[in-house]
Length: 270
Image (cartoon, rainbow, N blue to C red; front, side, top):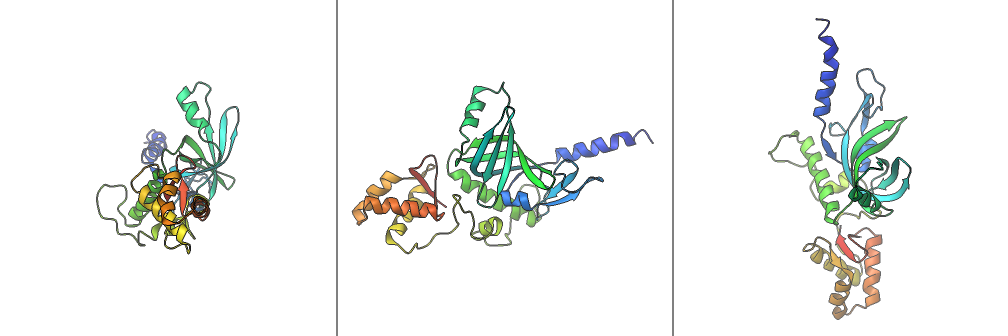
């Protein structure tokens, strides 16, 4: 009857809300998602009248990604971050409450420029510009979070393409080889500008190769990565000088083959 129609839309919207999932993604995936109107709304609502959809068909609302803070502007009621992950740059807004516990405030203060953070939030779009309203922005605990996130992005994307959906179990048959999947998702040369490029191989310099091989080997056995001092101690007997080793570390970092983890003396291979 006529009375039942008044409850149809809220129930439909509630069901849609309940079905929302947290999608691991890159910033490029957020920026390139397709926008479509919903229920007569205008395109580009991003949750306020429109729907964002990834290229593999998944709805994009709640997201999580890892990137480096390029700027942080604190205001009276919020903090606006610019965060980059090597695939793109996005604005992230986190609301601030004066009654937040000290632990929350301390966690927020750790998110300074050039620090890698994990962001969880909702994608919004206004006048063609996309941003993320964050429920959580925290400094990554170890460099392994970068690797784990990248693998999770690849896995969930391939799972969606294979038609497995959100169910548990089932084999995922990648549409591209796993060693090429990061490039396919992150574009071009892979994660760059601090996130690192995929792959490895010879660097054309014996010292560069020795340092990279040491960091790969030690990084596999340590969550925080290889230590600069221990690397020097291990490679000096092989005929390399302290200065050569440090220059190689800077070169590998600048080229995106390694990245610092908990401080400037701990390194992981990309």
